[in-house]
Length: 106
Image 1: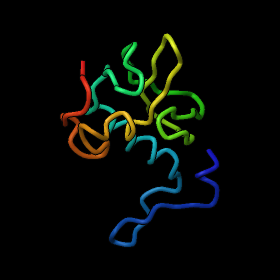
Image 2 (image 1 turned 90 degrees about the vertical axis):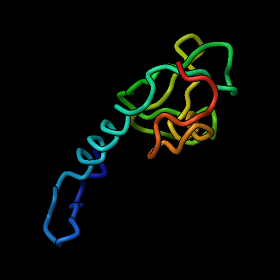
Image 3 (image 1 turned 180 degrees about the horizontal axis):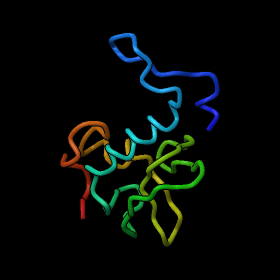
């Protein structure tokens, strides 16, 4: 992962936490994803439900049109994709309360 090239993560005490920041970032994203619903419906694409998905490469969010990496919500029928932040923002902040109140969570 390009994020690892020449970077280290230093903790509050000043000690090195890891020389592999990409793995740490992915671990943190995996931990956050455990709190999210596995399926949901969203007003931007209410024809089908979305499934929480972990890609093997980058994807484009159809909500904000930005590139994403890591976990995302995907419509398997239409390949419509949303960042967790875009999919969950009316419910919750993607980094905070996973049981918030946007759209319809399944």
